[in-house]
Amino acid sequence: MALVETVEMRGCAERQAARCGVCTDLFGSLSVGERGELDRMRRQSSFAPKELVFAQGDAATRVFSLSKGVVRIYKLLPDGRRQVVGFALAGDMLGLTLSETHALTSEAIEPTVACSFPRAAFRRLVDGNLAALRRMNQLVSQDLATAHDRMMMLGRYSAEEKMAAFLLSWRARRRGRDSGGKMVALPMSRRDIADYLGLTIETVSRTFTRLERAEVIEIVAGGVRIADEKRALQLASASPV
Amino acid sequence: MALVETVEMRGCAERQAARCGVCTDLFGSLSVGERGELDRMRRQSSFAPKELVFAQGDAATRVFSLSKGVVRIYKLLPDGRRQVVGFALAGDMLGLTLSETHALTSEAIEPTVACSFPRAAFRRLVDGNLAALRRMNQLVSQDLATAHDRMMMLGRYSAEEKMAAFLLSWRARRRGRDSGGKMVALPMSRRDIADYLGLTIETVSRTFTRLERAEVIEIVAGGVRIADEKRALQLASASPV
DNA sequence: CGAACTGTTGAAGTTCTTCAACCGGTGTGG
DNA sequence: CCACACCGGTTGAAGAACTTCAACAGTTCG
Image 1 (cartoon, rainbow over the protein chains, first blue to last red):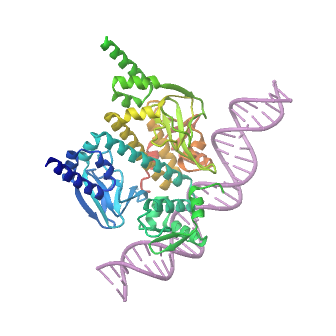
Image 2: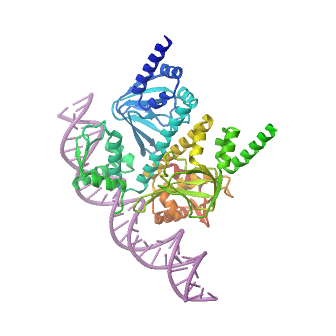
Image 3: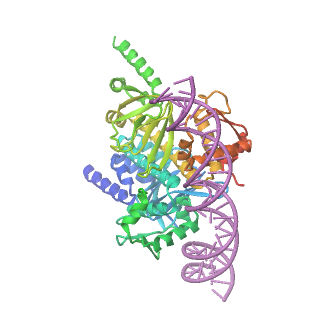
């Protein structure tokens, strides 16, 4: 009996984990009781395009795990300037701050589904579990490493290099999700890309057409096709000219 | 007897902790035995200006804890372009990567002293200790949050705003260490500042003199004095014009 | 149908870069 | 000892990259 119940719990937790993407790893390290506790606090939410998940300055009450959709994460300046820090996909976690308020805004780009947990309870569980903490460390360290790459990109790349690097890294993250190999779907707007790369929408648009005229990419509805893999890679890794 | 030994161990660990800055927090959570184990593997090293602590691509064999000096941490592109990711001061830790090779180069600016531990052993101890892991999480999360601020700075600030933000944040980090309140010592070169802000040395130099003519700062030997706190703060936080 | 929105393109303007010269300090070898 | 090279920093002039302002086309939506 107990065994069956355990197995069922496990099954339930696994179904949940599948729904919650990266949560998978974290859940794997929790005890059956802990999983059940967290599961009871779980809430599923949907977000329409342009809908906020949370905003800079909000109390950080819940953490989110995306199971579907695309989210832009950004910072705003009082005068309206915006820096897109990153895009989140299914499997990514949002709102994992240690501070009591969010320093970032998260906003759905595509119709998005996420499950969420009270941040305090989530932290309490993770904080008491070695394996979960280790996994958390990995996730944050990885984010930090890509943040360093982004600094290089923002500080030292030309517009063309930024665009090529963005396209390739975005494709790498979406690998498997997109249909064809060379086709890269771009659900975000030109403004999103501009604010991600530290450019203006006009420069993004012009650079796209310049890359197309140079036959590096082909602009198609809803995205681009990478026509010259090699040239794109050269631009993105900013090899010596 | 055992008690005395324990007390002595404790005393030793505390002296070491003091020498190792932020290590303090991490050490606080280790058992006496663990402290002793780590202490036996401890090595102290000094670095002359321009001396490498470790380089991008090196095997990540040791982690460092600065007790004195200033270090620049940067990424290099094959064509020589450089992005300074940050500066490390006494109390900061270096080389805390989860990957087997360093993605960043660390290089002394001032004469620097650090103590170091084998990374594998350090990780093993931290990974087995809840409190240490939590603290590590805090440290990395904090780094990630400032990385987000740096992205905003690199992507959306003007040269003047970048410089003002840099001066104020640098002063805040050095608070207490510097002599006067408004004097900001700048041990790093113009090139370091330029590569930190995504500018050229000429622009850094020109912006310094422009800020001086505008009576926001005063350039003095080895640093600057912030003459108009309010204006500097306005520039740095990029308030609406 | 018109309004609003996204994206593209052109022309002009600004900011920052590049190239070049120069200055003062430091170190070095004839 | 001094001439000379070198290095870090500043400044000027010219140039390039990106932005700003403006117009326009194609879509979506009420």
